[in-house]
Length: 144
Image (cartoon, rainbow, N blue to C red; front, side):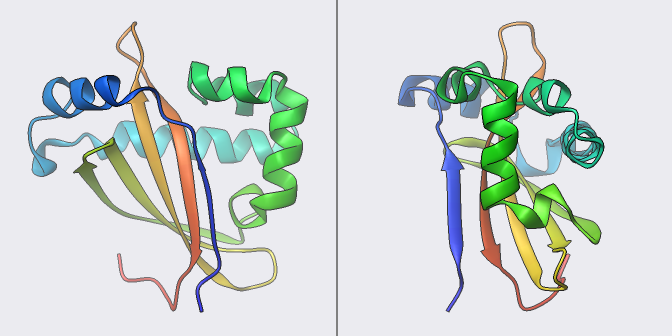
């Protein structure tokens, strides 16, 4: 049975609908390079212990929920070891969902177990993208 965790504190439904209609028009049109760069940068911040940098990639609503970079980092360290200390990372597909764009990330955790991390993104007022959540579940292997 797959173990799942979810840290998705998205903005109101109206914002999600706005994202779906204005940010990206078609699944094929997603700029997965931008999403992958954000994820890589956050994982690098985790690896170097830079809580402030890791926190900066989260949406404002996530930042408000966790209040401090240190609290956020501790939550990830305790509940998201596969993305906090991955042995390997392989990017899968980017796709549009009703909640906005998502990026599949296949990771091998620190104990050698395979995981699928589904990252969601939200476009900010300045046009930049930030991570709005991560759904983590066990994966039988990489099928990117």
